[in-house]
Structures are given as C-alpha cells and as structure tokens.
Image 1 (cartoon, rainbow, N blue to C red):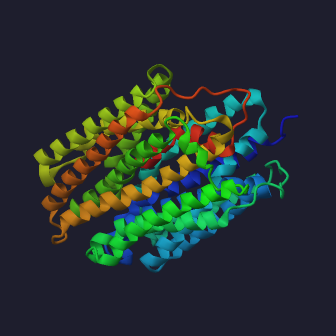
Image 2: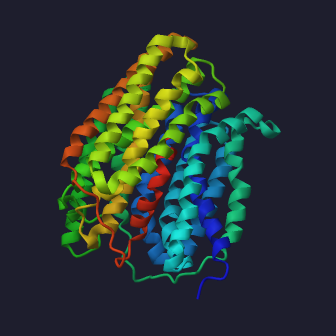
Image 3: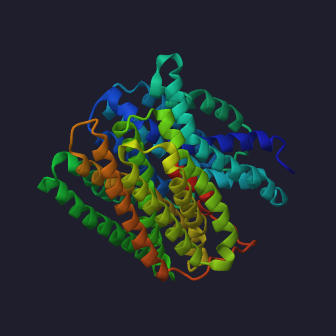
Length: 494
C-alpha cells in the first residue's frame, strides 16, 4: 500500500538535502564579511568552506552504515537535529575559531543525513512513482544550488534584525524544525543490530590522514611554511597509506572493512578517483577565489559578488543537462569535451581580467562565467557512471561511498590549495585592487593546470558509462551519488 502521507514526508527529505546544499556553499559569499567581523587571517575564509567539506568527507565513510544499523529514519532525524544545533552555534559564534568548529559539526551532521535520503525515498514510493519523485527532487536541488549565492548575498545585504551574515545560519533553525515535524511521517524501517559493525579505527585513521593533508594547504602560507607543516604533509601520505594497509588486513581477517580494497582493482576505478581529485579540486576553489577578489580586492558588496558569480552556477545547470543527454553516446569523450569547454571559459576570464584590470565589471565576466560553468556541468553528471563502469556489482556500495568521500575531500583541498596560491600572490597592502586582479589571473591559470591534469587522466577511464540494471537494488550511497549529480555542479559553483 502507498504510504498515506508520503509527499509530506518527502518534503522533509528534500528539506534536509536543501539545507546541506545551501550550507555547503552559502558561506562562500559571506566569508569576506565574516572575516571582517570576527577577525583573523585570510585562512579563515578557506576554513569556512574547507572545514565543512573535510568533516563531511570523514563522516561519509560511516554515515551510510549508520542507517542500516540503527534505522534510516532515526539516523536522519538525529542528523537533522545536530545540523540545526550546529547552525545555531554558527550564528552565535563570537570568534572565527568557534565558527569554523561549528561548521565542521555541520558538515559531519550533513554526512549523517544525506546517505539516508535516497533509501528513504525508495521506502516512501512504489517503483512506478519513483520517476515522479525524482522529477521533483532533481530540479529542487538544481534550483537551490543556483539560488544559494544569491540568497546568501541578499540576506547579508538586507541585514535583517541587524544580525548581518549570521542570518544565513539562523534561517536553518525554523526550516529545520519544520522539516523535523514533517519527518515524523517517514516510514520507520527497522534497525539491524546485526549489520556490519562500524570500523571506527579505520575512520579515525582516514580522518587523521585527511586533516594532515588539508591543514598545511590552508595554513602553510600564513605560517611561512615551517618544517613541521611540511612534515604534516609527508605524514598525511604515511597515515593514508597506513589506512589502506589496515583495510587490507581487516579484510583478510574476515572483518568488514570501511572500504572494500578490491574496488581499486576494478577497471578504470583508480584513474577515476585521480580524475575526480584533480577536477573537483579545480572547481572547489575557483569561485571562492573570485568571491575574495571581488569583495576584498574590488570592493563589491556580498550581493554584487553573488550576482557576478551566479552565472557560473546557471551555466553548470545547463551543462549538466548537456552531459546527461550526451553521456550514453559519447562516453568518456563528454568528460574531455567538458574539461576543454571549462578551460576555455577560464582562459577567457584571464584575458578579460588582463584587459579590464581593476575596472572589471559583472558584465565583463558574464560570458566566461557561463562558458566555464557549462563545461563543469558537462563533466560532473556523467562522471559518476563512467568512473563506476568497471566496478563489480557486489562492490558498488563501497565504491560509490569512496567516490563521494573523495569528492568532498577534493572540495576541501581545492579551496585550501587554490586559496594558498592566491594569498601567496597578494602579500601587499589591503585595497590594492590591481594586485588582487593579477593574483586572480595566476590562480585561475593554476586551475587550468588542474583541468589539464584531469584531461590527461581521462584517457585511462572506461570508454562507456555503466549500464544500470533495473533489477539490481542500489546501495543508498550509490543512489545518492547518481541522483545528486544534477545538483552538485551548481553546488560547487555556488
């Protein structure tokens, strides 16, 4: 029998996804204003986004299994409650350190929520209604991604109740409470205490390795690259290597690993991870860089900056449709085409910045932003199915979870790495607009270099995307990654 209040419960599920989508991006527009208010170095701007993405990357490794073990409804409600509390902590933060810590809790809470979403949608709807449900879900995600920066800029400019940037976090509280009220109509799938035990030591090793990698990129420039920071980078390689060794050992001992080591022997999967790392790192940092340059360097208001960068998200939305339509015919060639189109948009952007200098306007950047966004969208939608093409069916869940984790980690690396390049090129008096424009050109060129790396790696990917088997049930993370592909290009661009 159909769930009697399935559409009301579905609205709560959509709201949980929208809250994550907005909060993973909304702080990027607000970051310069937050830094001016709370103080701190430019690294604060990087950490406002990187801490969220890093915490999500770590928690995603176990987030999917929590729903199996304790019940998807219970875990979703717990994640939503934690997200609301973390949003209130963000709004109440008195220092940049407090805000960054609260952002990390937000990211971890989102990683608990999101793996439950697609499993709950399957619990709510019969097979013949799934198409209708996703016909609502995907556009909602895409529109939220496009409107995210505009909403952020608008809320800051309106300065409701005199709270300024804090409103971008306060707005989550009433929305989240309403979603919690609707979520009580979700079906209560039984918990499975017999489900695989959580690999907490593995999660701790992975989290330590990721932190050791991201921290030096975000703080190295500010600290002057002392020896201990470089040692952290070297240690990250050792710790992540140790994590891999531990997973293999756990598998051989007959205990369930956090990830299936065999997925890296699947055709094209390891190159796919490398491609994702290069590509998503490039798109993770470029719009953060431009928000800094436009606001801190050229004096744009948050609203003006949001309007200027919004065409990137709009282009990504268009490009995602192009990539989805052409994926089955072109295979991995659509990834190469998208990378070339995005690189063309970025190179045009460099030319525009060089010609206009500190007098560059929103109209000057409109064309390059749209072209770059279209190229990015063309890549992201087919990426999941092409990377997963050679993965064996019984390893699909683990492989999709690792890919999701790598995507979140890549966002964090991109923000920290490209931000470090930008700030190393500034090193001048605040307000020197020409220097900001020059630094933006070189940072954009570094982004093109990442795209060139992704283009080269692309030749090792499978030629065709995987073909879905309608009779094969998908793991919750698998369904999440596949369906959310429409939204993430806009998310990154926002």
